[in-house]
Length: 385
Image (tube, rainbow, N blue to C red; front, top):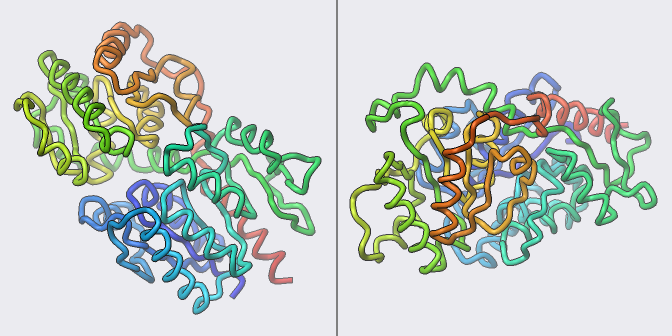
């Protein structure tokens, strides 16, 4: 069925990215089949996002759960392939850079089903990151590559995917597919996470009670998240980060919604006192409210870096590099690696930041989902002929 789009999601960031696109599917006359791999399965990391963001119940929940990378990706591919053979969609839609992303893209590509990748073209240029491997391979398996920024487009041009000398076709601002369609096509559609922030911020401000629950006042606390393997799987890095957190928390409350995996690793660490407000993972609307009201954000999350940028909140990234280089340009985001002295220095610098406002929004106009679906509808129409 050519006017059927099969969407593969599995992790918290993908639910957020998928929401604005899924919300508009009916408007464009496209039937969506949602496959949830179960990569994130805890209620606060999965189910609550479907409830809050108005995403329909998954048509298939594969319940894969936590496994080593190879086993998890392989099992996902096996089960996604079965769904693809049954549903026979006209196109498969994948988001971001998780194992679910790669599994969906490879399963579809091997069955000669077109793949559209939302958040294509991102590069950290660090191949030790599993996410970097996932995003690069997904881009090369994709037929339509929806980039969130001009930098992402340039990355694909450098790699030859969006090079006019090759088959790759870069779509102009008219968002019209070439006819006949040639693969791959690269589209700078903007960032769907920006769509989500704009749509949900007012809802969060009216419904979230998270600040009251933890006795927090706007601009009077820091917010931190840690989940990437480069930090959590290295005991020295993890210790450096949390020792710096303890020193920061002596001046302002520091609230840390902690990923279950990180909490388990942290439980073996000695010497941590109770100055930190470590809480369970929170829903999207609660996290949006925490982000919008924070004084400074410390994180290794790509998504949170962007949301801080969208909301004009100073950010410190606890990594050696970021794929979201746009956030660094106005000083709204600083790379502090995972060294204690660098983290504390970055906090000092962000406290001195006078103009807490992004100089430019590099992530589109908040209508990325509409542009993406216009392309997909046109693609489906061509395929039906």
